[in-house]
Length: 113
Image 1 (cartoon, rainbow, N blue to C red):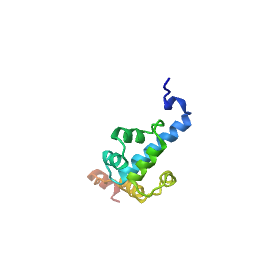
Image 2 (image 1 turned 180 degrees about the horizontal axis):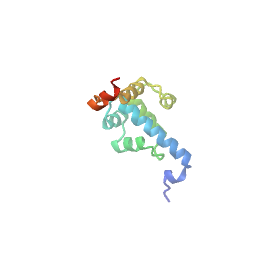
Image 3 (image 1 turned 120 degrees about the horizontal axis):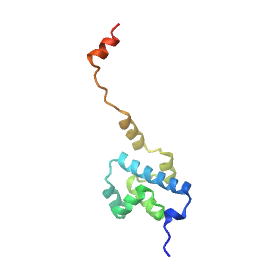
Image 4 (image 1 turned 30 degrees about the vertical axis):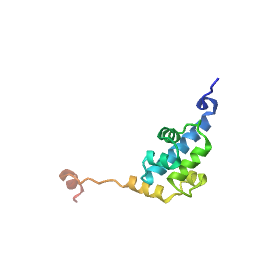
């Protein structure tokens, strides 16, 4: 009988698996690599890359490490979890940048004292 890995692990481990997947996805996006390209570099199918980024606990540990190496050569799993990659810092600053709209004439009048 085939057992689903999602139902065989604790909720805490499932959450950790999802967190690793989210970190992989953010790192890939920060480095501006398409999911299909990262999968190709890692020798994985695009479907497997999708499952990795969704945090599927049924995937092999080696697949996670190959995908990480394809996205960011030389980055360790500990480095991924620490979010120490400079590309992630750059992504955070890009996301924090917001356009500021001009004040309306009524808002300007309120500020004029």
